[in-house]
Image (cartoon, rainbow, N blue to C red; front, side, top):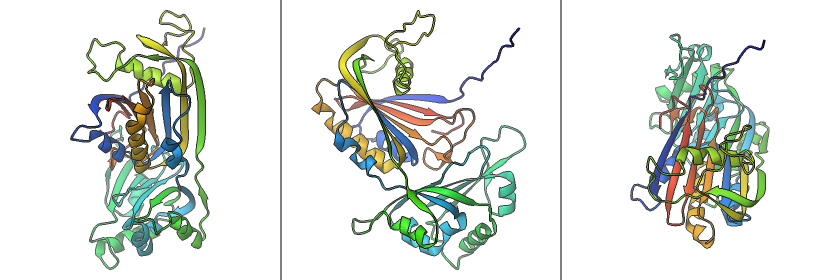
Length: 363
């Protein structure tokens, strides 16, 4: 007799909002700006055969780098601070580290360095931090240290700077493979300057590849949704729409299923419409909030060029093991590490926004 297995349900949160890109508070800009580190961008395009080349050009050509075996102490050297932290906009995070078991690092465009550390590393480092909010047991096993590298007091000769520099130099296990993107302050400086900086110091660097996935969908069945205010009794339900978006992203064919199917209860929400064509397009790489802001603006200002297209969905996936979400707030991996948002963009400049986050993440 086989034993039953109980799989834990996801503890993530799904937040739904409706608004307009033309609203005075520009809330959409804040959502994009706060998610600094993104590994994937996808588009669902009803009644459009291929995405506009101008939409994706900047993402495809983005210059992001992977730098191998970099000690954290190098990031507080005055030459690096003056060249890249205080100058231009820098996005930097540790690559292939696990937020629940490893030491992790992020350096935000604001100049804040975030170290998410194991208990042993934190106790030997000697810098002040706070317990991780993801420590579910009474005994704290992880700590978070934040250092403002742009602070007026963080300069050579000052007590804070010298202490941080000394502690990081002595902590030899804080060495990371890094994902790095630097936007210079003007067009006269090449973004690859940061790559040359590391190469001159004998660190191996490679361009982060941008992988593309394109699927043409013929006779594309999609829910009929509008920019009107969603009510509790509205059909389709926004949660059903979000689930359907996930099915499209995973290339699940729902045409042969129905709500009464024995094999699956997944189906396209009703009411729905069948467009002659549609497509799904995805890019994977290392994308910054600035890249996403440009893409979102291009789509929303040109969607009316496609009169048969009722809406466009843009989904942005943040790293599950990113040390931060919602700006500089702590991100964790409780069970799923959810860290994504989706905009459904309507021709009248209204939008639906879905935000999926881990259960303890602040929003």
